[in-house]
Length: 117
Image 1 (cartoon, rainbow, N blue to C red):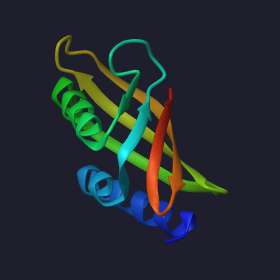
Image 2: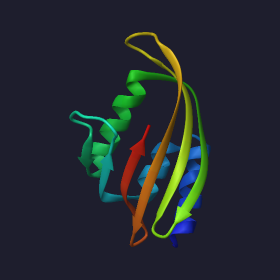
Image 3: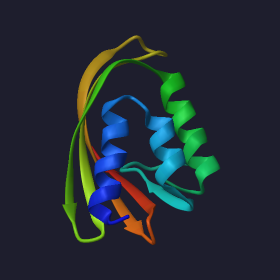
Image 4: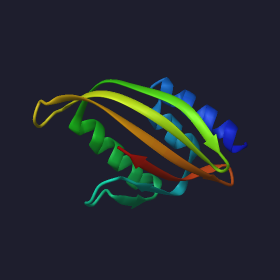
């Protein structure tokens, strides 16, 4: 599959709220995930670590809605814009936020995801 085809299929799964299926289908086993923050989850590697981060995030937030827009493709990379409405479970604080995910494709798999917020 081309980067365009992977980007389109991956983003369609995200738009259908099938985040786990998207990751399982397209992430490379050694994927690197980079967050725009300090701490233990700032840079992790491997599908198990990415799934654990995702499980933590969904456990820490009540998600009211997530909208994915895109993909926006350039060479071996594509971006997806996310608009989120969520509540932090610990504080009860509800907020709306935006985030961009930048994904790098190599040999038909997503080898890196990098988030900007």
